[in-house]
View 1: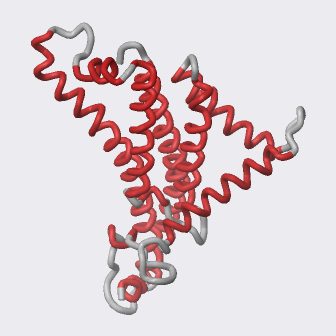
View 2 (view 1 turned 90 degrees about the vertical axis):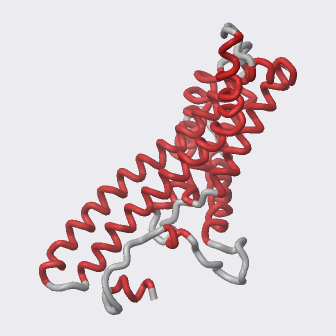
View 3 (view 1 turned 135 degrees about the vertical axis):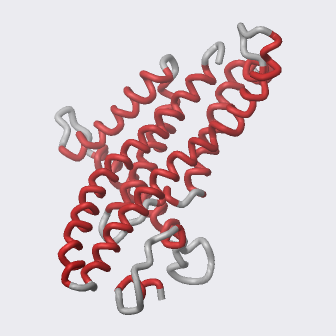
Length: 261
């Protein structure tokens, strides 16, 4: 019925909403056969295949494929791991590299024809990624400093007057154990959700205008043009959000490894 209304044959234009992100199962009747689930598996296959092929015949003079793969790896290794974490960064490169490429590919799915759905616009996926970051940075902090010292410095920040702990300690506990993972997930989800929703408004709106009177038909190309411009803008946002998520993960790890955090 919703598609019928949008086509213009059943009534006025029905704007896209959050219900457009609730996709039915492709087959069967369960939540594990929906499009986002298959896109996640597809992203793993694509990422694995690309980097296996890029590194299979590695040479001193790299091929275009090898150069592309090494460029992505070098970016994460140098810009996100080495420059942020510092000493001992190498052991975190595989995790940060996997995190960045996984988020990037699943974000870009939102503008690829036929797929056209950013996986991270489903909140469950950003939550899972945020939880992994949460456990990683707490684990490395406890491993380096010991549980007692690590949690003591979170609750009682060094160099702060004791009277201020009444206010600061609850805020620090809330920040480290609730705010960080929550905002990490919500930032990624909200950007992918809003961007895809905006694209739907202009593309579906332009399609609906084509079904109207001649005056509306003349306006429809402008709606499509805005949709195309927004697609390029959305690509920039998709890359940026993958970068920001990975950067914050590296910053949290660096903070957990610091002598005072």
